[in-house]
Length: 270
Image (cartoon, rainbow, N blue to C red; front, side):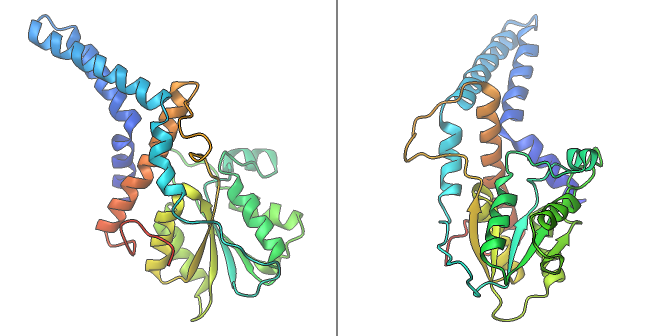
């Protein structure tokens, strides 16, 4: 039940939902025969239109995402290092429906999670390679992509003995708890954690709280404010999508901290 509530709250709290809802209410009220209600409705509609333009076209979304992505630097790891017992990559990059239907791994815009983990596995041949991610949908039951990820790793020469798959988790908290149960990490074992840069603060806080000794290896960067601090978007959907993604992480950090699922409000490198 908590999982379903979190999904519903997340959907209702995302900026795009709130802006479109404000616009819809404003337009409905603008049709009222009562002058005061009509004026308030028009005001709401104009405010929503301004917010839509600001959130969808301006660099605001990138500014909101930047602190998340900049929180954890990419570590320098020498080839062949034996400092890490495993590489844990969080699901979310695999397209389960297309992968199952076409018999090959298909990825979405977060595909760097898979490619980065694969590269690290080649560089660290002693480390286990762990994929964690199931299906987090509520209204539908699309096929998962964990098996397609495993088959892809096998196809590029990674031995089956090194690969572990956890395909039941629906969110980051379950990624951590179920992976911990799968690996049963021993004292002194350290793991690399691979996920999207914006998602890394929340993921690190959760995995640390569960009891993992993890080092962040962020990938799938979306913004670069050092070179393009005022880069705008070409259309509303692109800007709104990025703002929703960034807002989801900030809201998740607060919610998981209140639930005691992370080790701090805004986790940072030790």
